[in-house]
Image (cartoon, rainbow, N blue to C red; front, side):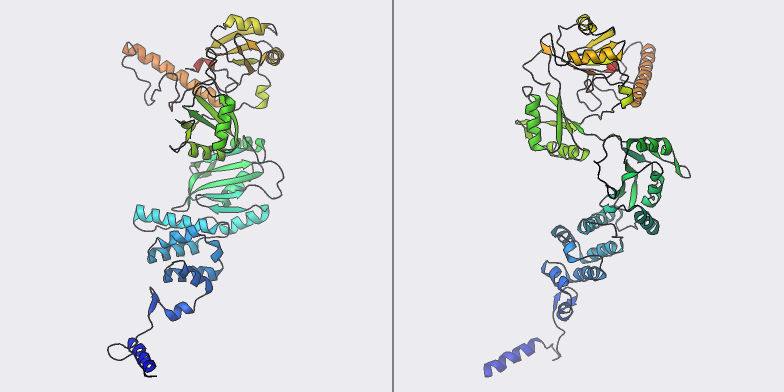
Length: 492
């Protein structure tokens, strides 16, 4: 009994200060005492168990109680990131998160991570958190969403409207349906952009690229329409449109790049082997384009290939995977880059083509031999052979189609040739050609003035690239299916 009384006395002494007065209960976490912690919600205690500071947990719990966020919305990544902040900074981040409009945010955990990331960026660049843009007119935006039934998803760096529209039961729009809109004033949002683009046709989705640091747009967006004609009308109506005084939009049909260039692959590999190998390492690979060595049949390719994917997203993901510096293909360190996007002529233009593109020609095949071979199917105006490919110009389209159907896949010389309709240059290609012609004239004038090429490196303001290689140092070759502008193509 005495022992029990002694233990009670010792416990009493621990609670007494030097003056004999009882101290306040011990703090179990910074800033909160035991009684305050015990009175908190179950979700608060879950945060404490996960290692969140008590003051920070209080702020999170307040957001829980407001109904804007639930504990189940936060994943481990967001909570771990929150723990890396000091108490004051974590509270500031949570305050900013709580003041944000979360109505259109589907992944709140990812959104909190983006708020933390931008908070760090602002502090790093400015020393303190700067004031962010207030965002769109929510009343107007709500009216648009109620009227159309579309959804709005706000994520890191992007605000996405639609995609797909309500009750959409058709395939996702493909090439030619999307427009790029640039030079957008930075304080404009969907409440102004959607009514503008709706005038051009039915919108499938609109993606406004955002700067997460200040909540302003990055000056551009992508709009996908449900049909191609709407995309074309959009360019006609809104390119150079004055959206604000002195602010003019730049709008053009977007060409989604689906093709990668891969170099330094073994020349002994066939198209089938290349497709099988890269299909194991990437997703969405549809086709492999190679250029064989017509005069060297043992070499199945020229050390490079083009990989074509079903979507730009899969192509972009493949580029990251293959170009990380660690991925090897058949033990080789491959080179990976974007291939120049192809601009496909419209169907009306292709219906008028009467020029054939022929590839896989050996050096022994001459222009005279080509004219004789193809002339058996109709009158040929002229023939142009460039190394292992060539172009056959017919007087009549029907003759060109007849020759293509008869000779494609047939053996000519030592090889089987591939024959297809040549693709005329698009308007952009024609502009590029006119620019090159102008540069050539400038080069000729400077050549005459300087008396030779020894001191000439190229026209002012433009760096010349090595002969036979593109501006990025990639090998250049004939476009798939050929093209009229063969005179300016270099093929090494």
